[in-house]
Length: 340
Image (cartoon, rainbow, N blue to C red; front, side, top):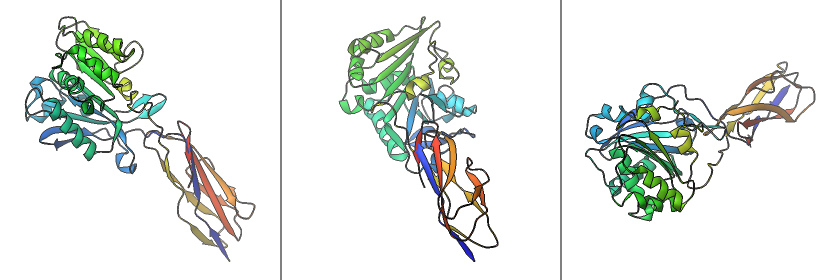
């Protein structure tokens, strides 16, 4: 006598799942001839077409050229190299950005040059185009501000947020950064008390144009110490790191919670006297983590029992002749669901 089992069904609720990155890493690549250290989230290869926010870093003038290790002396790449996993809690969710440290071949890259590099990054990686974030120090800070300060709306409208440290004023002037604020951009500037570069003028111009579009950190010191604030463990008085602050910004409003992907397993057939079967579900989430699992029976003879109905994998026993259909429901840490 045969017992037929239809494919178990996995239901995923509208929540987001976030997976912890266990092996932080970055690879040295070439992007349009520039050295680039690229860090991809740990689940990047398992999330299909899911997109990710990107943080693009540009160094100071002393790190341009072809000696690649120079570009990660400072900035996020420095901490990735030390083992940081680049995972951040943002609005109650774990967000894992793509992080790319670019090394210009020569000093003072122009706005069109920066645009070309961003184009290449967007084409090469699965970037959420509403969450492109730039950061740079000294010359790198100038380069990112210069990109958005009024050359063309195509450039200005592209960037959700930027963190600029110890930067000379952009070509069109600090006050012209108000254009970026009006386009919906957000800016956080850092400069030292002994290295004044009028970055507070950017803050005032942007906030006068759009209240709350700019923030400013005036540290005691000179043209130095940037890894103090690039350290993911550093937080301002309101509890924000530069990373959590950037990742809260989006050109399309708040980031959308992505639904998980699930697979409840293949159909199975067993033959009596065997009267139990293992159900093995698989679930993942591009921007969160799976919070709960719940197996239920949708149809079939009465009397079956789950060994662990709240686990991804369970055993069903006390089966009798007939066709059963089982469903696995998963809920992510933001409440999204789905079914298989």
